[in-house]
Image 1: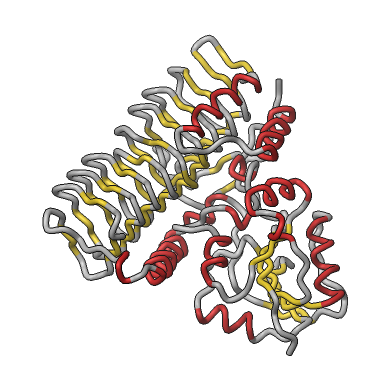
Image 2: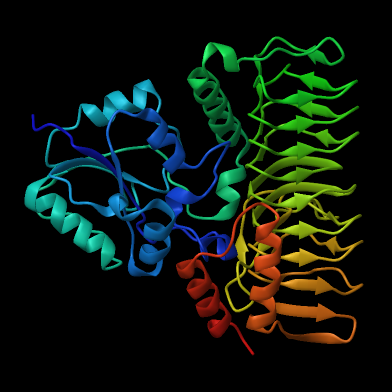
Length: 415
């Protein structure tokens, strides 16, 4: 069997997370405590390479470096939408694939493939062209390994909880002995599941960590302040701060450098996002550089108790989520004023500035500037000025490809 020289993560273009897909490829989406890309890199079994359609090529190369698309002779190709972590059992399935064979889902999506030579190069070329396909000589093997395609798939309770648990176990296992902290005497752990506290993390007085139904991880330089309650499974990313007297309910995954407060549950923060004040947020997905004003809250249940339907874009179709609980999707760089009310199933586009007393309902176009006087378009130069200021607070600045992509999304949004 030809030796594998890399793991190739590819974006097949079949996943749509609404505004969350504007600035990141499928394998860059935080689907638990980590992204699939972060999980693959952490395996350290093989170099990781990526392949995407042209819309993400510059973004990915700028974020990951030119080496991410360097040529490889043979690879295990893994779909960026894979809704599972590559644990020992899954790695064995992939390693057992013969060269020139692929695992394919019932809808025809390639989940994983072991390819080499011309078949690999042809597959990469088809991904770049935006229409992934296998050459006729590749053997197709049916598989039930799940792929996500819509935002609500990421919040499916059992799978979401399992992915958070896998990420907690993997991250904690990678810590050196001197990095392993303990729950201090002034905090309380309830339950028998593991509670992993990095040695540089800080827990305030009266913090309760409930691991009755899932593990909890507090990563390096993170802080859970006085009187907060965290229920597992929960992943609190590096340098994230959970404010005093906060309630983090089960299935909470907070990326790095976030601020979290109030009542939060069944959510994913991509990273560098602020919800630093009281208010409820549930069954929600948030991008990066989001700021929720004090008292902002969302509904995640209809008064009729019916399943939620939502639009990922204002001009898009109304889609059934098959979920009774579905809060909201908030794109990157969204800013919401104090006291903002977000209705069940709302989807807020990239770069929106909302400063109106009215509730957010349905899908909001990217770069909408909404006040009590009406809606107009957020000027791109003003938006970039604010984004640069906000990102500097975390020691970052907009990258060239990121700025170009934001400008393209702005140009495509209604004026």
